[in-house]
Length: 542
Picture 1 (cartoon, one colour):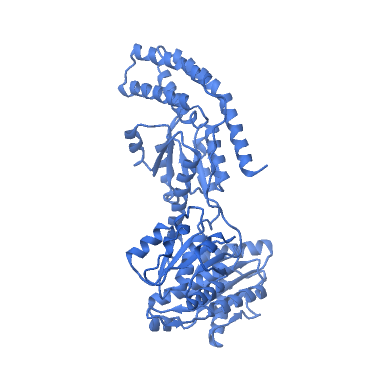
Picture 2 (cartoon, rainbow, N blue to C red; picture 1 turned 90 degrees about the vertical axis):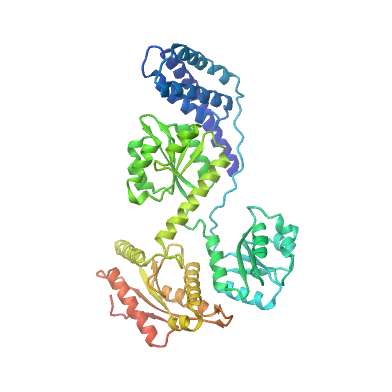
């Protein structure tokens, strides 16, 4: 069965389960309506059940029923807020509740329409294909050489039509020079949409108009000549790795199991990892085990409120960055706004369409991951910071000892980096650091760990990799890095090299500190023996 057909079938099954439950829900509402005059808690119970049904009925195709439940909920809430129990109001409320069955009878017994969900998914291809529309021969050759060094495949095109018609283009780089060029005014560019490959624009002029034209055709980058090619590659790399950390993790907290199951199905079908929770007593364990990046939480649940549970989450410092989105049938603006200061970040009202739910959650999750990455990683390179990469060495060393598998650690240092800063400026030095970090990330495996250990020093942790294999991999990266051409602020081109020391051992007494120390000594040997080379730790070292 096709994936979209499978989704429709699963959603239809959930709708059938809801329909079966709906008859029981309406029977219970009628029972509570009969008790309004004589049972003190019946009005609150009726209000809670009406609230729950108002949020779920519309989602499952019973829009009229959902709206009527919302109206009755508001009438019940008004009585509760006023702390009164008018017999006339209660009788009217009971009569209206008994008529809800009529709305069910007149609701078409057909599944709701499911919208196509166009959400970016993680692309597992090893090599990205970049389309170049660059008339300048020298610029085109520089782009091909630099992007090739970073592991990209490039193809050149003569005009916008052939570029947009090409298959398997992952991103486009377009040079709009010379001044006055109307290339971006071509209808092909103006017809781009959210599914079009990312576009980067190169221009000979740095002005507002050029940037505005780029934005209007959906460009994600704008670079002026002379182009900082490592900076351009960095923008490409950041674009491609929006989902680098794996699927977004979303936790749904709602006492309506059918509704949360539907939300989970919609989000998981778009590539997200979703878990649900109906018992708040399990909240802390679930947060710890699942580590959600977004929490969707019903505002009103039996015995608990959403803001109360949100504040319980916020008591843990590790969860302060996790956005909490209240998802509720509450339409009272004042109550919505009063809930947000109590640990909430956003509020969306049930019922919500599949596409709106997906867009809201995706935007929140993406932003949360960006913030988390910014705080946990080095701001210049995006790699793990000193303490974090040391922790990864310890974790992988313990795993290697436990599984008796090889582990190699590499210490990498850019050669004569101080002279780069002194001669070309710190901005150029930053470009060199960023370029090496991107190149390492491009060429190494996803299971490898990378960190910025110090100013121009990096650490790579390669689990399951022998010393000889690590040497071969790093030496190919060394050669590629030496071919990358950098541009100074004055437009003067230059190249850089790096040296590295690697350590790998299966002796029973080795540990993470020994690995780092041995790799550092091997790096010293590489520097002393002439730089621009890889050295292995001595055979006598642990």
